[in-house]
Every structure is written in C-alpha cells, then in structure tokens.
Length: 148
Figure 1: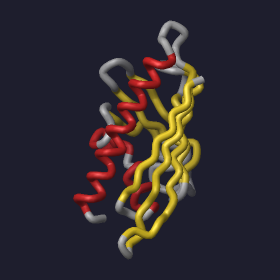
Figure 2: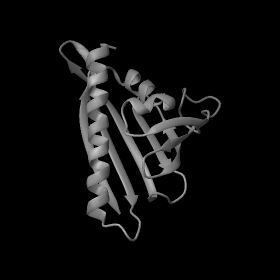
Figure 3: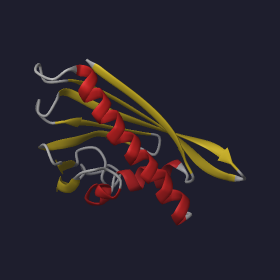
C-alpha cells in the first residue's frame, strides 16, 4: 500500500473550505483533471456530501469517486472500482486555527491506495504527491486571493 500525507494552511474557516472541496464540478480549478458530478448527495447530507459521485477525467484515466462522509471537519472519498489504483481512499481533515485575528484552516490530506502490479510504488507515489501538492497550492492561493 502507498500512503501520502500532506498539510497546508488555508486562509478561510473550515466550513468555507469544505464547501469549496464539495463543489465537484469546479474542482478542476485546483486539480489537474476535469470533474463532473454524476450523482447528488444523499438526502439529509450537506451539499456535495455523502453519497455524491463524481467522474474524474485525467490525461491517463477516467474513473469515479464517491463521497463516503462529509462535514466541516472531515471529508472522506473512495475511488469506485480498482482502476487506476485499487483500495484508494482520501481523508481530508479540516482543523480551525487562529490566524491574524481570523479563523483559518489547517488541511491535512491523507491518501492510501494499492498501485497496479506493474507500476513501481515509488513512481506513482511521486506522481500523486506532486499532483496533490500543486492542487493544495492552488487552493491556498484561491483563498488568499478571494478573501473568503
């Protein structure tokens, strides 16, 4: 199994961060992929939350992800099926902090998955880590520029 753990500080409260991360159709602003929402969240769940399914199109693969759990403190999603990787789960933890008199968020992004048998773990780990790091930098820039 491959594990990746990344962390960043965002200049917005956790509820704003969660709302942006659950706007599935607009995640392409941050990630190197196109997203579309295939299914809405379950009744009684927050917008874009548990039960929602999104399609992800990258230059190398097309796959679907399902939101398992979502709140202003935690988002969990899984890739449906075993391609492009198996047993993929993403856990995003949103912790409020004080920053210059305002509420900001420490985001911790934890991913685990099993790479295809033919691909070296170190190679795919490096690729995914780089892609997520870039996305978190874009997300941080978004909140800094939009003063949300």
